[in-house]
Image (cartoon, rainbow, N blue to C red; front, side):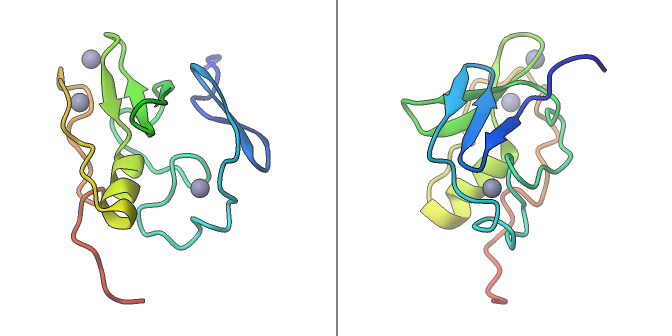
Amino acid sequence: MSEQPPVEILTSNRVKVSNGILTQVHSARACADRSYGCWIHHPRAHALSVAPVHWREDRGIAERICDHGIGHPDPQDAAYNFHELGRDITVHGCDGCCRPFPSWALAPREEDR
Ligand SMILES: [Zn+2]
Ligand SMILES: [Zn+2]
Ligand SMILES: [Zn+2]
């Protein structure tokens, strides 16, 4: 594996993705206790976890680009949007590369904290 990592943390609030550098990124502490982790600080395994990240500025979401150039919503970002922002970003034109979509990504909100 000589490829670049899909996400490169440059400084505490700057992160490099395939199409640029994100600024004003939240701190690693802000996402530490999320059950679904964080695609930046606490990555979890999923079908496209080593695929490049494309930040969609227009929608404010992170997509994973598969080998065929198709953008799929990052499941951890999808979980964040669902649980924290109440929006479902998982609808997309899919060629199947992000399947199976991990069950933890869109599990119902847990009221245990
Ligand atoms: Zn984070
Ligand atoms: Zn594909
Ligand atoms: Zn997909």
